Length: 265
Image: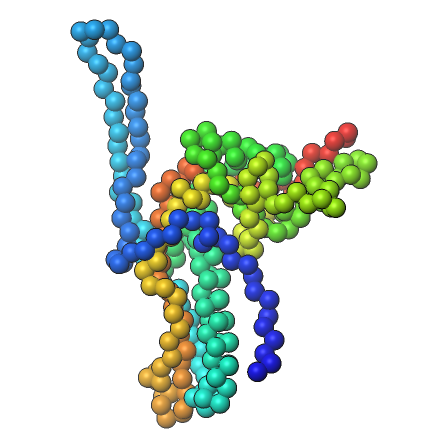
């Protein structure tokens, strides 16, 4: 009793995606590759134009995120509250890595292929402007954005932007506007690299499939645990990330200059 819990990082990325479940070791789906639309007005009796649709098979492999720690049998018997605390921290560790994998996984080895490596890239001029350009890019791809993800420090820069008179451009500190840009919610995530942002149709462009929910298991059958009265505590989860529509995501880097246009200068 009396353990002071360290502050946890807010985990937000999973909640942006469609939830799903799978009973396989991979998720296969068919994705439209190219749609050649030759539809046209035609006169009676003339041959109609031919259009074409090509597809590609995509595969999202189920990936395992896991870790373990040792603990003595006596301490867990004598302090049952400690086991509850360890379980909580182990599960949090899984979700912390899951957040990073969904956004940044490079697809090599045991890593997920995350959203950012598959997203379109966009570079721009000012922080607020570049987000608007990215929103347009998603809309021109015929998708409707559902969220903007950025690091908390970038969101702070946007909120603190002032004009030459010292007046806040984005928000009045006494009347908070909420976390949004151009009418779309801003989600702060420390899994996002500083200086980067991601705009996307998260609710339509990607889906996370759970193969095995995060669990914590304890066993004495590990090396010489039995003769040492030791236990091994293992936390593990298995999941697959399917990015159906890469064009519905735009990843970019904020400029290193002023956070937003400064009026009057």
